Amino acid sequence: MLDSLHIDPRSGVPIYIQIRNQMLHVIGAGMLKPGEQMPTMRQVAVALKVDLNTVRHAYDELEQSGAITIVRARGTFVAKPPSAIKGRELAARLDEHAHRFLAVAKGAGIDPLQLAQRVTQLVKTQGGK
Amino acid sequence: MLDSLHIDPRSGVPIYIQIRNQMLHVIGAGMLKPGEQMPTMRQVAVALKVDLNTVRHAYDELEQSGAITIVRARGTFVAKPPSAIKGRELAARLDEHAHRFLAVAKGAGIDPLQLAQRVTQLVKTQGGK
DNA sequence: ATACCTGTATGATAGTATTCATACAGTCAC
DNA sequence: GTGACTGTATGAATACTATCATACAGGTAT
Image 1: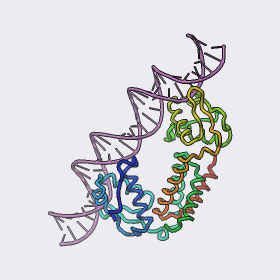
Image 2 (image 1 turned 90 degrees about the vertical axis):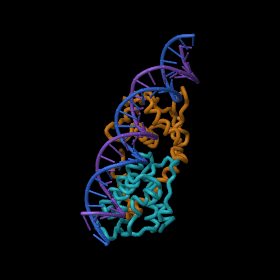
Image 3 (image 1 turned 90 degrees about the horizontal axis):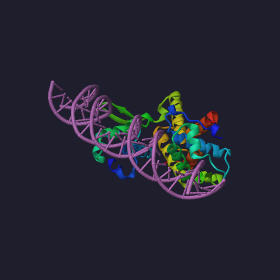
Image 4 (image 1 turned 180 degrees about the vertical axis):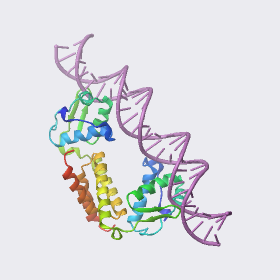
């Protein structure tokens, strides 16, 4: 699984962003399932020849967005699906995400409505994956 | 028209981004029409008590996205087709953001459709600014 | 040509972001 | 407790970004 990771230092995209996105992809594609242990920060750091803290940065964001759970000294794990989470918590998280995306879109000079529309379109065309 | 511009230095949002967005809004709302001359960089700089180069930064992005045309020594003008605000660059960026939106939502166990819906709802309620 | 308008270029500064090396601390198996 | 694994914290080097002051250069009207 670690083999599928790779970074491009010349892309200009921060390493931790690259790691974060690839992890999201891996999780989204089901290569790592809910509850399953993520690769260790050190494993990733070594595999990518990158500093531990850089990986941590990526993992931190993943945890903040609710994708994974980090447990000190034990490891990191793919978060359980929302069905196992209470309605209120999910609603709150949804709201938080909505706000964040709004802010991001605005900051990027993108019309949020257009973005939302494009997303729904994407979901419908590619469906499952 | 310059009166409708204002920046918030404490918002954390870069000044040039604020200018760019407000210009996009002004153009999008038809307060400035295609072919019409934009306020001079200096006019904006003075009106907002901001440096000339900061305004330039904003105008540069507007030109890159195809919203305006800059002509040395003559001024800047709203681009011909109003829909040209959606240059290829911007479309590509929108797509990139849409994909990331999707990935993050999935990783967080949130239904993207629901999220998109919530975003549009937010936009409509807080609308103007 | 002069004056006055326009956008352009250069260089400095402050703040933030990114990455790293290294040391710390919790947990578990033995 | 020891050892070997986990994530955590601190501090520094570097790079990037945003902003500014100031000087330059192209047009156009007088």
